[in-house]
Image (cartoon, rainbow, N blue to C red):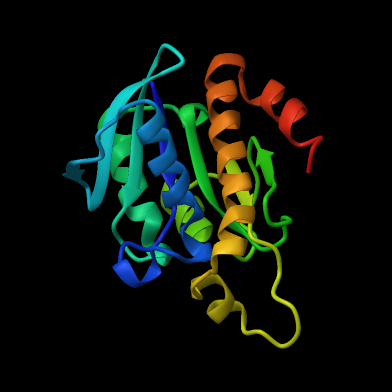
Length: 188
């Protein structure tokens, strides 16, 4: 079984922002595989289904971004799943918009949602997909940038990265994290 966690902010005003790339990827996976995200547990919305022949749990924590790990650890503990079968999807300013970066493990960088994940899971040994949102130009405040609304043109660029993340997750489940990094990190 795989636990796939998309990071985002649950409030409606954040739905069209760069900070919700994780939620957007989960929504795309759910739609493609007809997985209903209509259950609630451990302060999250989730659904279960099959992707590439494997059981998955798709999770969107409903905490604030900075507390995402609180929900994640509840699922990991309840299902007694190994961290090697966890993948976290989140936005990343250090990755070019429309691209992704995949890592098998590592630190959280400056992303507060990932800081919470690392802290609550008490480990950096879980896979992640960073969906690129790029850096703001000029004197744009970092927080205003990630939670700011995006226009239709930028949405199309960001969707390229989301779609790439969906493909990478499918490949990862079938062929493992190392093969996925070899295939998808070359492009970005």
